[in-house]
Amino acid sequence: MTTINIPKGKKVYFASDNHLGAPTQEQSLPREKKFVAWMDEIKQDAAAIFLLGDLFDFWFEYKTVVPRGFTRTLGKLAEISDSGIPIFYFVGNHDLWMHGYFEEELHITVFHEPEQFEIKGASFFIGHGDGLGPGDFGFKRMKKFFTNPASKWFFQWIHPDIGVRLAHYFSVKNKLISGDDGAKFLGEDKEWLVQYAKRKLETRHYDYFVFGHRHLPLEIDLNGKSKYINLGDWIHYFTYAVFDGERLLLETYKG
Image (cartoon, rainbow, N blue to C red; front, side, top):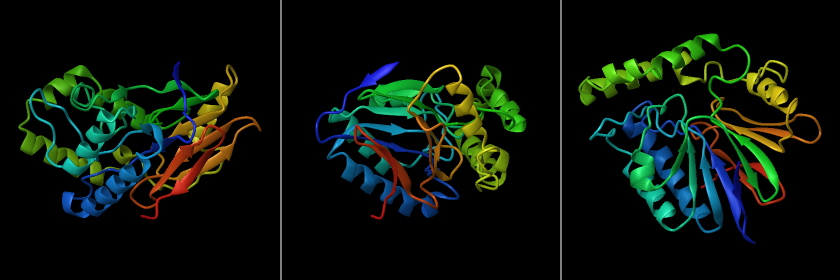
């Protein structure tokens, strides 16, 4: 378990699901500028920043090439990281092919699985959220295929101009990949991440479960002592969570 202390006057921020580049670079640019403006504001009092995946609508790291674009976002992340503010990144189902670039170039800690944190005495269970909980079998099979070393090996031999174009096409068209198929609240008894959190609580207490992936801002009390938070997205809602050392709250960026 990673422990994070919050100095007086500082906060911890959480955001997820920007899907930059979708449906096109030009159309996502205003959203990217808004996200960069948010990061520029929170760097003033951030003790740490958690990004819970799908920052990009597609991301693949070739040995010497990364997808074109996102200069504003990557530059702001580098600036914040270089200033000493730790950034923790959890890969999502759109950027699961990360292996080294964020760590080496931006000094950002990258997680490929959910992780436990203790933040000023509060216990957190944090992850993107894809493939967790009951059901969702079609996506789970697809994720297993995408993360297979053979699949990654074959894809890297496709010219980036073709590979990235294909990936963007399927990402936009295929709701199974996008993970936001019918992004409507299913009811507490049918929300698989809520059920996953409740099962985790059978063996261990956590104060907060924080996930992305569902593209819905959700705040659900689990048992009177634990809370489930879904961060929503930066496509429709522009929501994020902030922890001040006492409470974790969902907020909307109006900038």
